[in-house]
Image (cartoon, rainbow, N blue to C red):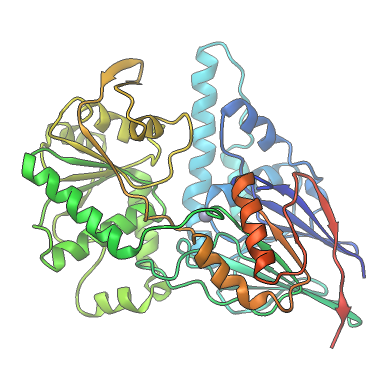
Amino acid sequence: MTLSLEFHGAARQVTGSKHLLAVDGERVLLDCGMVQGPRRIANRLNRDLTFDAKSIDAVVLSHAHVDHSGSLPRLVKLGYQGPIHCTPATADLLEILLPDSASLQASDARTLAKRGHHFEPAYDAEDVDRTLERLVRTPYGRAIDVRPGVRASFLDAGHIIGSAQVVLDVDDGEQSLRLGFTGDCGRRNMPILRAPQPLPPCDVLITESTYGDRLHPSREEVEDQVRAFVEEQRGTGGRVLIPAFSVGRTQNVLWYLAKLIREGTIEPLPIHVDSPMSTRVTQVVARHVELFDDETRALYRQGHDPFYFPGVHFVADVEESKALNDLRSGVIVSASGMCEGGRILHHLIHTLERPEDTVLIIGYQAEGTLGRKLIEGYPHVKIFGRRMEVRCRVRTINGLSAHADWSELLEHLRPLAPTCRQAFVVHGEEDAAMKFADRLEDAGFAQVDVPLQGERFELGTAAAV
Ligand code: ZN
């Protein structure tokens, strides 16, 4: 049996996850993510998948975030005709996220055309429809034959709803190999989701390394910061504006606010969730109570809903959203999380110049984004071409990340060290990936590589038992 792994994305960077396992004639693609970043570069990379789409026999998808799933419609457009295996909750999220991705590209193309630039989207709504038809829903823990001699199973990754680690078992009757893939690995002590399930002993490991060189503050610290910033605003009057990603972060911040109000730590206050996407995603998350951790399921049994509690209002339409301009107290949670588009921009226009208001940043802000400028303390920013003075408070909470930090990830992987013959570190900036690779070696992993984009590795097998 000949086995190889090729890395076509998320190699020394954090987006565009695509890992290709070749077993004799069979080619199984793990994730098919979009590259995110400056449009000109991202668009070129997202149009060229760097492998032949028609040569792929099966796709196994770890989770719905577009940096793992967003190029699936491109794969289908370029001729992929096989199944896309994922968990049921991942499929539910893809039904929201992929059409949104197509419509964002279409609207970008229209805007650029007005300025005389040509921009061809990587795919359109029809490609998305044809992609969604290929989804095969498989719950955690059930093994599926994705190709002859290749079985896949999903383990909870605790990262976002439906997120999975993937175990691939390859066996041709004479030789066998087990590959473990962390996907994006969540955290042990986060609200709502369960802790990542332990991976079984593996011969080959592919691990993420987003926070390969960073530690997160504890959950108690996060809770205390949410309390402090809400109280601070209440003391001076004004409102708190929270830019939040629709998947995960919006639900987490609601969960924390619900807890603080329920326990009487903060006074009840109006909370407006203003993003059509966040509203739909929260509905999907709330449909999957079976995937929640014991703590959050117990809340439901006691009659407490962590998302739809008194005071929370999901904004229905643009008129209601505009009415929030006059709101001078309470909390507004809106998207996008990096302040690069969406309704958050309108709310920022009515917040930035008011010293009594707070912008509370709770997620990663990529370089060059408006959110990054705010945390870096720019005195002026531009929104829709309008120069605005930043006079409001800008506060940051770092501990809401849905990725394990290096110490959590290392503890998760350490039990695999004695059996793992080859480990590959992906999905991290070069520095973070390199440091995490060193930590794996220190923990006893025999051979650890940080692959380059397009790099290919031969894999050794063991005699089948
Ligand atoms: Zn993710």
